[in-house]
Image (cartoon, rainbow, N blue to C red; front, top):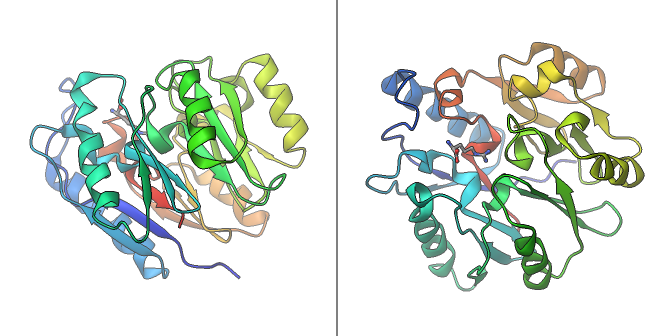
Length: 263
Ligand code: ARG
């Protein structure tokens, strides 16, 4: 019913971006390990990426690449602090040439932070965000590399600076999203393409509730989002909750920590 998935995550947490909010590094590593183990315990394969020196945000592995059907579109980070992370992700795929066809980007894009794939929606759609990090030109480039239609969605609220803070695939053909994070036109497109989407509240979105990973049955999300977890349970999903309070201080939650590998 729910085929196991593949993910790539970084294997440790070495530093943090927001020095104004102290992070308990030991607790952060513990929380991250619980997430890694929790996903693996439910039958998914988790690959680990070696952390890079001086790359405090590398724990947010979602941003390093985006794959569909064995093709991988590499990331090109907006800010120099994260630029070198793309190299580690690229190496991961280039080391496995039988499994992956890696294509280096020429346009700024932050991988699965701004791209997601809904395989059974309209024959397979890539949803892509722009407005804060990823450039629209990268959407066109991803479409060429991955050979799937890309729907460009404009993010308009700086609190939701990556697509994966405002929208997630819940099943192979449906999504959950927070409409006010998107421009009027983008909301209209989402309504047209996903009339049965689950609509999230501001509380869900602000608690990083949309920064979730779903295998179609189990929905991995953070413990803070109890109301959303109850709603998802009522819809037949199994919420699996993780306390990621320390990772939240770095600007991410469940989804930010893992890139899905779509062979
Ligand atoms: N501090 C990180 C950044 O600003 C957070 C990244 C969150 N990742 C994500 N996939 N939304 O880049």
